[in-house]
Image (cartoon, rainbow, N blue to C red; front, side, top):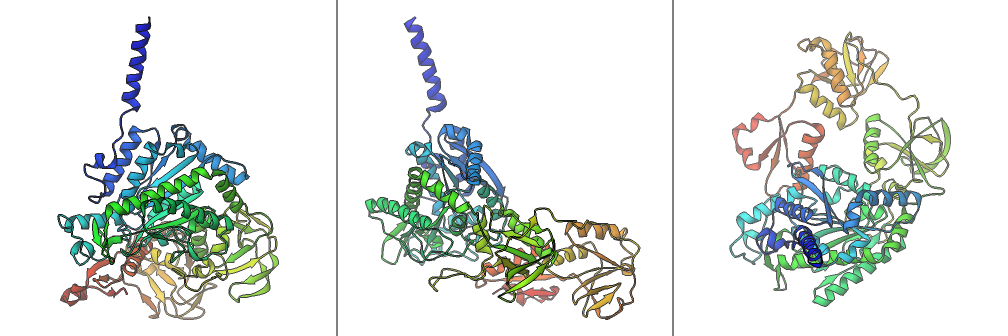
Length: 639
């Protein structure tokens, strides 16, 4: 009987070892080369995360979107096996505790790697961080959920890594003068459309940012770290941040940044690694990977490692010291683990701070906004992505307000259905930042811009008031969309924003002939300003079912079309006048060269392709001397 028990026990133990006791491969073992001896393409990094997720109970891996170049974006959740099994419940409990001002027993620490593609050491460090969290630091994971985004910008990263692999010497050359330390235009820093994703957290213009913010809002972590690289002659940087701090930042957030910095310093001191704090990288502009989380109540931080796109696998810096990729990986790994440790040790304090920050009760400011419907909709779309609530006034009322236009206090009677955005909501402090009239700057020397007010950015009339505003989430007697008439002389549309441009683009590419007026026109009781669009049915007889097509396109682009019954105008030119210019779809060329600003180039490229949805030809500056250049109607020269 004892023998039988022994064999049964041995069989169970053997099965357990085979199932769960297999030694996980290190990044080096999995990749087939020593980590830091070469750069890893994004798909191999993801393969390693998938391998760990398949063979460990400490991690859950999910996709959250795709880039413009169809690379998949991933998030990994690392915690104890029991926490991983209940990961969705933990997330829901965490959010509910913030809404209900109750307790929570888990720290949420989010680590974002490689937002700038050629700051490539951090994604390598992400693999090492994952491996050591679940093999050496499992005690941290009992009360901590670590969220790792291994590569925020895989398009930019692979642009850099692919280039570097093609040009590097073997063995690598450490001289800064050599080709492998001098990236060609546009470099690996930006994404596909050459945008800086570290300036896009608040504005959400790019697909990576739009998809990431959905998951961020689903978690609202206690700590968020954005891993970066800087010039090769700078030592490592970590919190506390430099002055100016935005005035919305709490004393606890500032103090805890310092505590994290001291914990990082302890480990860096042990290794005699150089570092600095409190310099250069401030906490003001709200669209960074450190400030946006901070204004959402987290401890948001930037960590900067020497390197950037010039470092390669190894470079001799200005102090005649060899800086290697292996060094850079170890530094980022160490600060990352140190930060997770602080989340583990101070869960209660972090959660109390986050709850307090998001508890926006009492008398707060309300913002009353009116203007063009398209601009209002663009603003509402942005607010919704940030989970910021807005409402509509329920009656015509007079309030004591501050006018953003006049920049003074006044009395204002506002109609019902005025857009109302209140600070008295969970994300109210972010509302306060985005709508602030003037940014307070303690030190005039700042890292980036100091003005970002949304009402000014969207061109909307805005008033703020301390009075209670009666409002509802539902627009009262909202206007219903109706089909346009087919029995009409013309269709008209005012020109208010680039949304009209996207609609015009769709008209032109459906072979619909469109005109614009050079002078104001009054007809059928409506006044149309300069630039308004007119579609004359008489010159579009080649289009079958013209009204149906225009109706479908207007609904797709959320445009309000007005039927015009006659070509005879009460004021201004008649619709058949030569002062209504015919619009020809132009052939547009966008010129680039080695001295072109990649950011300005990308902005124009993105505007045409993604916002106007209008084709643009990208051409090199050498083509300017070709006789075929006359094929283009318009040439755009970026800065």
